[in-house]
Image 1 (cartoon, rainbow, N blue to C red):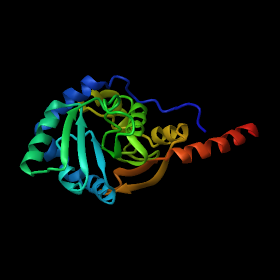
Image 2: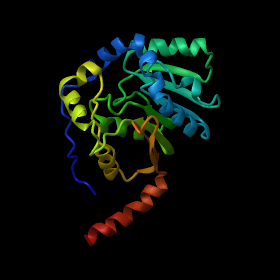
Image 3: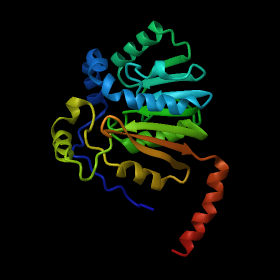
Image 4: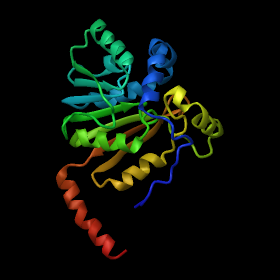
Length: 241
């Protein structure tokens, strides 16, 4: 088990004010700029949730591009940090008569107001690189999903030998606050977090079109009995370590 996270972003200046300000600028052109390239990831998330029932939380709902893709039997709540993006999501809900979208709320995704275990499924498309503290986001997603529920993510994951890695590091260092996200994001952030969590398991990880630029990640918060049963096994292993 990993004892410490060794990933250090190229910049530590990205904060919520940067993100909110950047996405306020992006809001009028967000759909035009990002809809096509991010569509496969949104569709993958919608397909993965269609087989589920109950309540779904869409973290970083933005302008609501994926909201019409969700199965109508799901009760959907969306949260985002940026008021301008939420306003456009609300317009989409009204325009497309998405009656299963029951709430759109401004919240910090790393400190949400929902009680523990509030949702049957939580999705976070393209959000890990946006928040200043991705570990805190993952902790919060695991907190608000019920035991046995799923956490579904889509995000850009940097490759170790990716020819774009040098460019990503430069962008991280110089323009991340203006962009509103960090271009560089290694898988180690997620894998180190998983190493620290006995109550979350990785179910699926696969690259998506176009060109494997984004990665689909499906996690499950383990039922309480599974966590309890695993704890003695871990204790026995530590005795003989």
